[in-house]
Length: 105
Image (tube, rainbow, N blue to C red):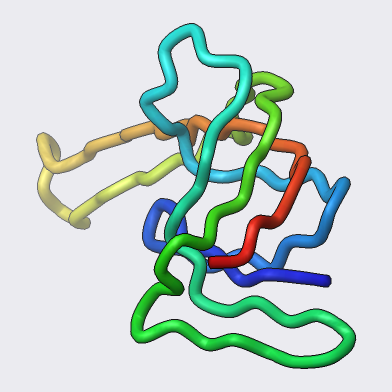
């Protein structure tokens, strides 16, 4: 059985015991999270598609921790303008989740 979920404006295909990295969520001190934007669920017999989401369906995940991606450097430069240099760095924050259970609607 697998499901396609949406979080952080991205879609992920998940199965039980998968580990995924999603964009940072506002979780506080929680140990697990319930992702309820389920777009599609498929098992051996049939498939269910939402419009846009499946009512009552959700995916339970354990929170493994947070991490940050490698730094991405953005350098903007205009030639022949001495004061026109700009260097900006960005590190995206991620939350690592382990899928514990997929609940159908």
